[in-house]
Image (tube, rainbow, N blue to C red; front, side, top):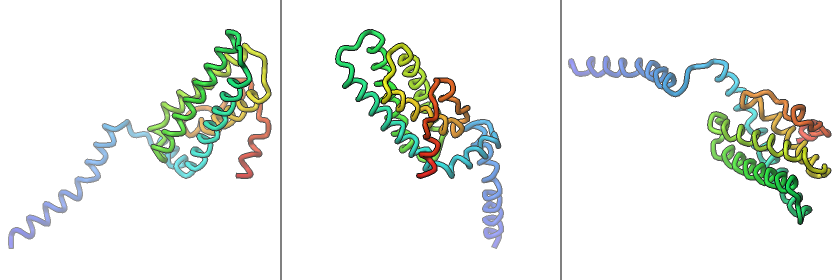
Length: 179
């Protein structure tokens, strides 16, 4: 008869220690930040938007990179640099899309990939400022800038890619309302 109360007491002790153990685990994982958790939960609901934006960035970057290579058979030094930066942007966009799909609904796993994509975009935009403008490249870069602006708050950044890089809206906001 004494075994039952002992087992019951051990069980209650174990159950009551789980919240404390979880809190301790969380403190090792990262410092607790209720604002981050709230932002993360709000972003969690919009994850479909993140996957669509990642896909569109990848498709657009691949398209403008391909078209630019196809249309520049004998590039000069500045054009060759721009083509390399567009190729890098396309590769980063492909990797970002892959990671977004792999780590579903957890921006902590894709934040570094987003930053690498943003850096590749900035490098491409800088190199494009040294060559003649091509409308299909400008439209594509504006579309990517818009998507980066849309994703930036999800990763705790300001969304000012269009303004910083000199790309205008071109109606992409209306594009989202139809999807």
